[in-house]
Image 1 (cartoon, rainbow, N blue to C red):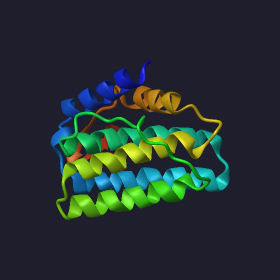
Image 2: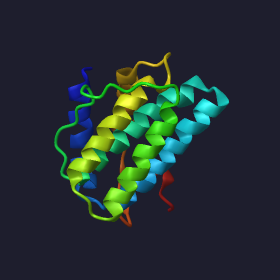
Image 3: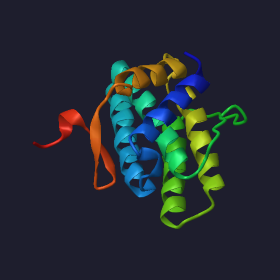
Length: 160
């Protein structure tokens, strides 16, 4: 599946569940969670977790962009170099947090999201970025759940 098609699928999935209009501050919590899982996967050398987490982080970023009114993402313009991509991604996440919490221009958020996507392409040389996003899409496409206090909770995690 092509990258743009995957992005559009995630955007529609988000709309169908009301996530596109949810509070970005709540989506930030999801971003921290997924980024933490990526860091743990890298620290433990767990390739499966790395690949799963890259896809999950991108899904969260696509939804966060929607919530900020950002309709187009393009990481092609960024030429990122360096050995410590995780550090660079963490700095971008920090800036996004500050921007959302302080109501900065959403275009600043878009730039940071695009830089994170560009950085995630380089986090692991054994991973194909689009495959990670496609795997994440395949996992969520039929997921059911509901919004609880502004956060989408998957059906299996809902307390009965």
